[in-house]
Image 1 (tube, rainbow, N blue to C red):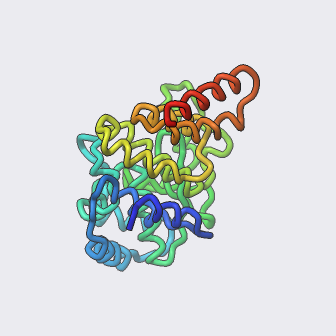
Image 2: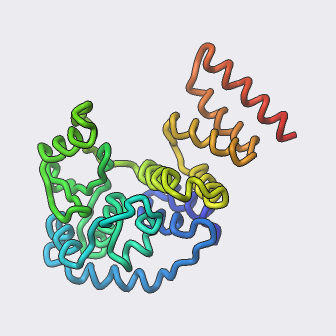
Length: 256
């Protein structure tokens, strides 16, 4: 199945599965992972969960060997959900998706928490505690604030809303941005495949859509770039809007 159309279908569902969305990303540029093997690992891990709550799931992942990479943080393998599950190594957002999926299978409803600079999982039952599968621990709001300050070099503090649940589309956009920022962003074939996926993510932030338009220009896909710039222009006014409109006209002229 085409990963782009499948991702659009997943994100359009009433309760999108982040695992299914991540599976679409894992099929980028012709990859064909074996879902049955991955599902089997997840079933085994979920069966090890003794307490079907935030603490229980995070502890189980830690005890089962899930952790962050020692080297090569931007290695695309740490974002491919099939490899994350089988190798038990991933970046924070990938491990959060594993935690959410293991929790679902074990009976715990966990939430994606896209805190600035680091990805966590949360629970409606424990609104002041957050799972950090990357480090194998559960932390409180003060510890979250300390992480944000450290990662921002003291230039930013924890804002209201930073620990709110992150919508599925925004999670997928962040996954794709991570891949684009790494080696695959310099490989035009893979970059094109990532852009194809990014184009079907609903409600992209204006800055993300503008960046996507720039990548599509680089790839020579001027009509697609114009479509993205049209979306940006709809939320822009004044001279900036006129400049965007001019770029749209120029791109569509090149396409024709």
